[in-house]
Length: 519
Image (cartoon, rainbow, N blue to C red; front, side, top):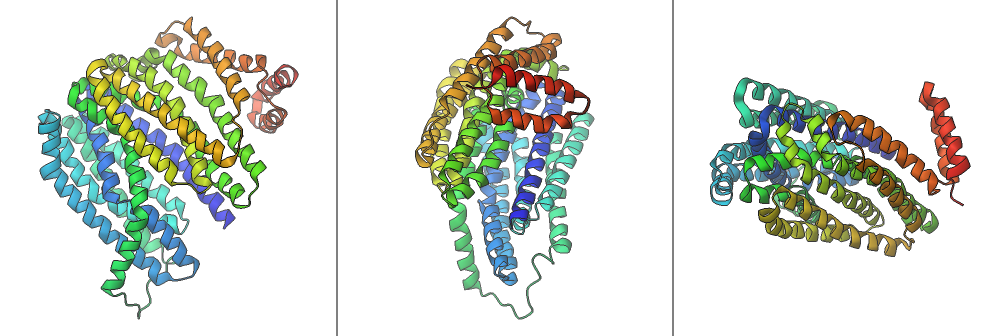
């Protein structure tokens, strides 16, 4: 079981990084090819797409994974397969129902009555075609997760993303604009759903054998199974919707008050601001099972060490990255969107969002720790509070401050979510906050930030500026004596893998050991 867990976690971890990069690639390509106006339409549509796909799944994929794992643990293969079939019926119904509702009712209401932008209606209607495929895909991914076949999830995600990017790019290049980009998404999901069906049909028999010939499952029993799945799924879907709103509510609100070009500027800045989350989410993925295991055996000292190290390691990288993005917002957008310099108008939003992502990074790690020690409802309540707060602040600030108002609303909400979640972490784990390491990181980042103010904010100076800031940050950490003996030992273990750079790495490690160790 331990090998399954480690192997599965590693596969998903690597896959998440690869596909997060793929998601950024899709957005960057579409932003460059479409231009601010059409990309604003796409950004608005993608916000609603995420929300409706989450609604359509009903929170059932995790329920499928849970009950399949339980039934397979006692070798009840018939019930394992029945769980998939029953959940699939519910999800297909939800997908078709919401798909039809989106095409004929919701899309016209949003485009005409809410936003007052008729050009958004057809792209929103296409979401209704994506939803049925996405729920089928979600159901089978839940099945793959239940038998620890995480590589099957990766295969379907690869097909989804590769074909989505490929067809979207081709359709946009031949002149189909935003509609073409979304038809590429439809094809990506359709092919991924088809691949999931094929994998389940031909690759899952040895993990979930086909039902025995005498297996009969009355409708009343299936209804009980459906109720059981839905009960488990309710808190999952509430949490998922709240988290989806945190990501998308600003775009939804801006669609009403601002022009589509403004929405395009925000949509171009948003994924860049979230780049530091790759680090914090990676740490969060690791800390959840580690904290869960330590809490289960009541190894409190180890749990407290995990908590302190999770914050320390994440903030060591995330804080300077976020401040660096805020400092170099203009040249970053100039370099990434070199074909469409108009996206530089998103720089104020990028600078503010980057600061907010520091808070969200801490919240993400805190959430994993709280979940790991058996309190999943606490993050759920905080997320609900955060999504409502974000919506209210956006509604108040966007008409006044534009896209900077949306970024400010997100940043304030992230801070308000971070504080209570950290409080519960320290209270429930009885851990003292690592005040001194955090203070030293903040001081070192401030030194780097002051230095960065004097670097020209041009695209030519972006890469040299980043390198210089990294050097200043490193020496600032040495100056404040941030490092510990364990850090030096860990660095030495890795330095041998640097090849030709190992000698330089050894010299830097010696420098840290001589001047940068905490007393």
